[in-house]
Amino acid sequence: MKLWGGRFESGPAEVFERFSGSLHFDRELFQADVEGSQAFAKALRHVGILSREECDGILDAFNRMLEEAAAPGYFDADDEDIHTFVIRKLGERVGTLAEKIHTGRSRNEQVACDFRLWMKGEIRRIQGRLEALMGSLLRLADRERDALLPGYTHVRRAQAVLFRHYLLAYFEMFHRDWQRMQEAHLRTDVSPLGCGALAGSGFPFDRAQMASDLGFSGVAANSMDAVSDRDFALDFLYAGSLVMLHSSRLAEDWILYSSEEFGFLEIGDEVTTGSSLMPQKRNPDALELLRGKTGRVCANLQGLMMTLKGLPMSYNRDLQEDKECVFDTAAQVADSLEVLTLCVDTARIHRDAMESAAERGWVSATALAETLARRGVSFHRAHQIVGGIVLASVKAGKSPADWTLAELMEFAPELDERARQALAPRAALENHQLAGGTDPARVEDALAEARKRLARLEQARAGEAA
Ligand code: ARG
Image (cartoon, rainbow, N blue to C red; front, side, top):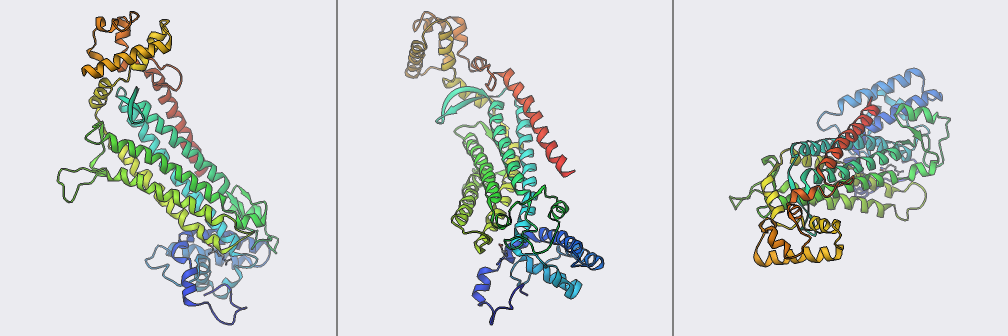
């Protein structure tokens, strides 16, 4: 079936039908299309196109379609797109009455409406997954109160941090990702219904009523914008790209940290694989796939940006290319978050390996230099002194703990027993007592604060669902 044809003498070529048909992917919008059509049927009743009985019959037929759609093969059809499919299915139930459902409606507003409804649901689903991941990071931080990590810059040991401080860094990223999803939701939550093909509808529909029937917070202000705007989809693709970029950074850390060379942690059997050839192997494929899928999700954003670039006003068929990239991003991001959460939940932390890496490295060098600076030594000289100690250590194969006070005092008379104690990585933690730093008491505060912030996100989402 087609929703057009009167003006044509012959039909489209088979190759072109295959090229332009979208049912094989836009069936994803089935439920949104039916619900949107139900709201539209009510609007048709209010303007007198449908009688009450006709409208009720249509609403009921749509409800039954929603039930039967789970049957295998339901979508095996050759309709041009999901909108055509839904109207044909309606016709199978209500006969020629179905021909009235498209009165004063264009697929241009309809597809925008369906897409927005679908995306609103996906954004909430992804926010739920982000909350679960943040909760897992906080639980791991609760479990690992004291674990000490040699913090890195340039993948070189830099300064000691609490492992939970490191975990909270990722909490911050995923918290911002949740907010970005919220922003995307805000701009998606606008109803295009009543905008027609581009100029507005020829019938006096109550646009606010249709919007509220569908749970939209508002109506699009301009009919041309409403049928051609897809920047709400770009917002989502961008927010999804950042979720993946952040996941990918955590994945990369843990690929390194779980290697034999680092030995800081292990992820569970649930998320690791073996080798078909090398019996000893335990590979972090889950983390590698998280890193790998990031490329494709970022490409989805690039792809749609290029599709939209230079599109003339208003609807153009190019816009049909907006869907697969968004469907793919939603599926990949939701799955990735679930897998990453499992990696965090099954992680076993090897505290001793982390701590001894910190002790062998010079992660307290800065704290020692700052101790000297507090005693009136210029920071430049303090830096030189400590640099000299590190150089001597490297040459002698010594760790910080191997130095006696007498030996240290040869480098600078200002060095005393308290300064020597500052060489212990744990002591260096307390050197960072400002808000946001890794001093244990500050981190405890930050963790308590993070728990409250997560609870607020969960409440905000539950409040909207209620
Ligand atoms: N399948 C189209 C899309 O995804 C919607 C239908 C509008 N088609 C049209 N030729 N006006 O954008």
